[in-house]
Length: 480
Ligand SMILES: Cc1cc2nc3c(=O)[nH]c(=O)nc-3n(C[C@H](O)[C@H](O)[C@H](O)COP(=O)(O)OP(=O)(O)OC[C@H]3O[C@@H](n4cnc5c(N)ncnc54)[C@H](O)[C@@H]3O)c2cc1C
Image 1: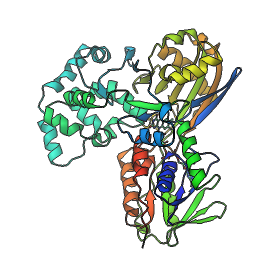
Image 2: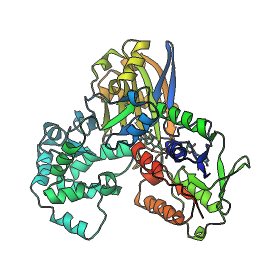
Image 3: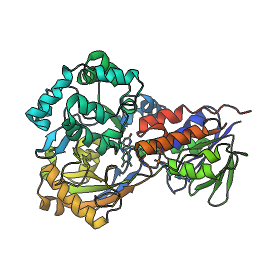
Image 4: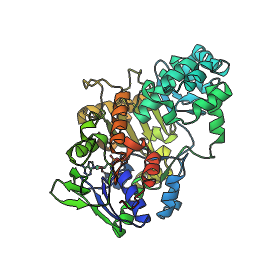
């Protein structure tokens, strides 16, 4: 029998374990911490009336791929798949404040530059410039494509729609949701096929409108009733019933001669295949310990960690939020100076199950989740984020919630039932071009090593759907 040893019990490692077991192999999963799931985690808010579980990391998955639907079905969770409130989200922009986000778009790039929400967000002149995309030939981009040059989201959008569209519509989404600078993000990575379709159609907006119209009907994201932690629980039950899952088992060394993982407690776990489902800096550390790697001397420089994020999750009893004033939530432009958060999710407006759970405990109870820390922040710590002290985050969160949702600060402060602060550092890859090169270098260094596999957000692409796809595609054939 083939034995697969997996390092890391985040979503990537657990899905790799599930996949290996399904293929008939035996599995050992080693997890450094005391709990599974990595960045998919529930926070249990202790409230006077009872405990409320809310997502403290990933809260949804992209619906464009059916891979997670299939997995959830196989694990018996088909009836628990949920879609968000279709009310849509808002944006918080310099000068105008809160405005509804354009309904037809992709990564903030408008599918209809003449839409009312686009004019409200850009102003009449900005919208007129954006509409030039509809009539300007795509020749420049066809040439770039033919030359095989990489095209970033920022440069394409700035040219076609004007830099103001990058600044006001695209940056809040790319920086807020994906923690990246639009001028660093390769468009083919996040919107495969868009550039070719735009060249064919003579317009990026028309191509987006077409792609959106052709997408399966329904929401762009889905989740699980009770939170994404339910998927972790189901995967853990599956893996533990058929294999081994060990907590407090931090891998510190790798011996590829014998295909053995060594843990901090000096346990040696041997397998036919080794899957590293951890962040790239840790993969680099582990590879550097193995004497059997011919490419050892050729390992690229160690990838760097990003600045990370801090989340402030607030349970607040506030009638003014009943009207869901910002739909499912709000993304903040990096150029705004009166709000420090990069985004806020109105959890109880977005997910019916969360509203039912919260309001079963108390009427008018709302859960909001604010996030702090952008990848574009300077490293001097001047912008609030991962390292900001708790009291300061709390002060900012009350002020920001009041500004973004147009609710009096006293209404929040006086009615705050519970607050939790969660900090994330390793689960979000740093997407600068230099870091992406180092990550690609690591992948290249291991590609010819039989029995060694890398997976996870750093190698598969951020997002649960991309990770699931990648981990499920790992193949554990018998080795010579
Ligand atoms: C706040 C936040 C919100 C997000 N929201 C979404 C969302 O809504 N939708 C979406 O699709 N994605 C979202 N993401 C991204 C998504 O959650 C992550 O990309 C994904 O969960 C990463 O999974 P992973 O298994 O690659 O890594 P991780 O979740 O980081 O798991 C890695 C695991 O490896 C363990 N480990 C590390 N080192 C060792 C070692 N040496 N030995 C053994 N174990 C080790 C860690 O303890 C951890 O459990 C979000 C991320 C964050 C931080």
